[in-house]
Structure formats: structure tokens, C-alpha cells
Image (cartoon, rainbow, N blue to C red; front, side, top):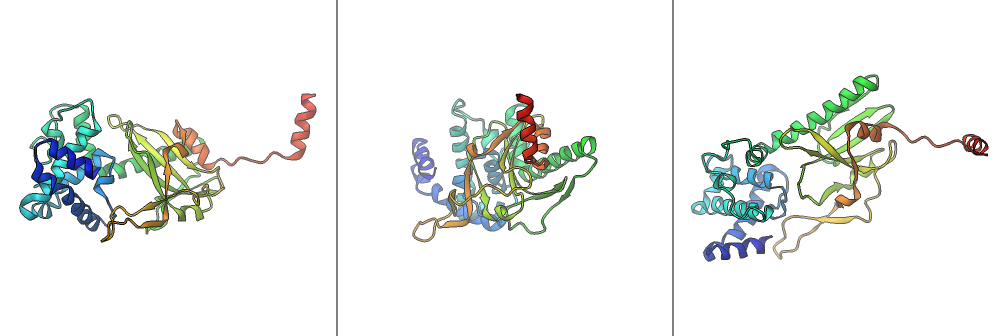
Length: 301
């Protein structure tokens, strides 16, 4: 992506920027990682909403505006250009994005003139943390509602104080304890894989739930599920691709992250409804007793 950005700048007639902005994005990746405490490679981001959020953070009104203006505004200009480049490449059918879409300093960046996809995109990008928490609460609320209506209010919910084992929620119902890692995407998003901590496999019934959300209605679903049946641990991650750090060392080598594995979207099971997901999470598949098999065979005869 870095080379594609450089080539795009040259095509735009900005040869000077092509020698400067791509490296500035790497510097911003390091700064953003330090500010948030979460290692981030801006070039690896596939979610345009998140990218626009970062661009806004380094704009004049953003929370990292001071750093954005260092080196005569080089970093601010670099991330602004990269956001424009990304939108053009992410939406090939739209060759000329509006200034409001890609310029965090534009007066209409926060509020678009009508309720189009662009306005929804801006809201999601500017409030990504709010969105993630909202999705989590909507998800938990739907599960609690099902527990209330159909499962004798048996669902219990807890959250870890420290996030170092790869899960976001602990749910218990019907004798099953689920340690759940949540992932989210907008319906129509292009994310192709997720990174999973191997420690999640040490839990008795760990799993990953990848939630899709309609950006206009906030309706949840479908759900992508990676895990086993209730009461059984996560499928082995041993043979999965080992994730790498997003930033290279002084020699440009990206070290492996031995406890993080990359799981492609194709390894997840699609579950269309929250009702079916609840069943997947908490209903055990009971083994069939030998006498039941014999009885079934006798009946068949």
C-alpha cells in the first residue's frame, strides 16, 4: 500500500510529496500507536471509517493536532492525502470523491448536507470508539432480551479488568461459560481476516464473534462465528498463520507475534440471526446413547 500511495502521488503531479508523505505515514503509525497504546500500521488499515477517524485526530480540530502540525504540517498533509488516496481506491466507481469525504479540516466534515452514505460514513469514522461500544451494548442487549423471553433470565455477563487474553466479554448461561472476542465490521466491508490471541484457546469454551452492522439502521447481523460447540474449546490455532508486527525494526524486518494468529474470513461460520447465535453459544450437543440408537434402528425396521 505504501508503494501504491507513492505512485498515486506521482500521478497527481506531486513528486516532492511522493518522496516525503509515504514515510510520514510510517511515522504517524508509530505516534498513533504510542498515543493509543495499541500497535497500529496505518497502511494495514482496511476500514475507511477508522482511517478517516485517524485523519481527523491529526487535523486542526483533532486531539493529536499538535503533532499533526509538526514539520510545517507535513504529517497533517500526509494523512489527509492518504485518506483521499484510500477513498479513491476503496471506491473505484467514484473517481472524484468530494472534499467533505476526505478533508478532515473541511467545515462539513462533521455534518454532511443530507443523509446519504457519505454522511453515515463520516459519523462512523468520527465516532469509532462510540460505535464499538454501541455495538457491544446492542449485542448484549439482544442476548439479554432472548434470555428474558425464552431462557428464564439465566444469562450472566462480565467483562475482564485487563485485556491481555484476547476476549472482551464473559457470558454464562445453562452451565456454559463463554469467553468471547468481539470483532465488528460495517455491512459491505472488505476485511478479509481477523487476528486472534492463542490464549483464547486456553479457555473452556472460547470463541470469536464477528458482528456486522447496518450503518444506516444499526441492525446487527449477520454474525460470523469462529469456535466450537458449547462446552468445547476453540479450534486449534497451531497451524494458523502467525501474525507479524505492523512496524519493522531498523532493518525493515517485521518480527512475528508468536501468540497472535491470523484467521481468514472463510474459517468463520455465518449465523444469520441472534436467536441462532444464542443457540450456538449455549446449547450443548448431547451425545446419543447406545440404547437410543438401537431403538431408532428397531423403529426403522
